[in-house]
Length: 266
Image (cartoon, rainbow, N blue to C red; front, side, top):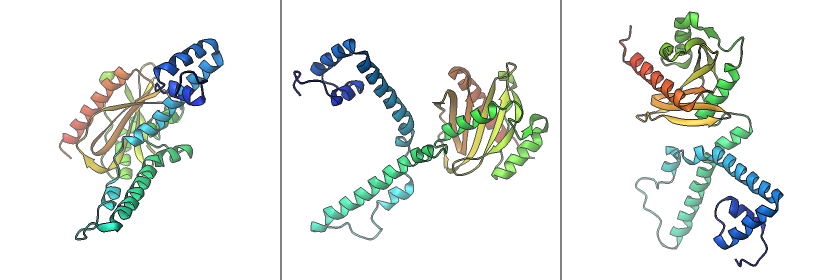
């Protein structure tokens, strides 16, 4: 595009995306200095880009379900199509898989628009925000009945759960409750420090076993979340605390859970 042509909407969006050619970029920078409204518009576009990345990046990072991958494979014992029918058949199959795949990645955003949590860290953050701010009933069963709480949650979730001891980190157990999830319920353990600052641990059963235990971090509406998967369980530690502090607590939680799992069963 010639540098002599007037600036267009495409130029503005390309500049906000960092993809405007240098010749046109100089013109737009000069225009921004003269026009505060244009500068505000570029800032709004960039904010929208950040919001879109926050909404969709988690889904783009998810692997396609094995069922979809299997559906793309030809049936065993059947030869691949040949001749003039081969390309249309392959094109149709590719279109189907891409379409279903995009539907899979976009399913969370649809649920999000309907008000349903879409990712595990987002579910954890929203659940924490809902109950941690409740001064009267943040939990269903209080810490003075910890044994009953753990037995009840383990029975309801159909797998053993544990309430980590975070006394060394300055947090005491408040109690816990059963919470709803996207597909299945989870257990929420609430903790509080001397400053009445609360953190929560959300535990849920995952469908697949995995050896992936790396901590991952997400910031959802001001709530920090460290989450990880261990064997067939997902864990998410949430709170409005410093990221480094939350990570330190998450490591203690991981160690406590590992010790509880390794302990001899009564």
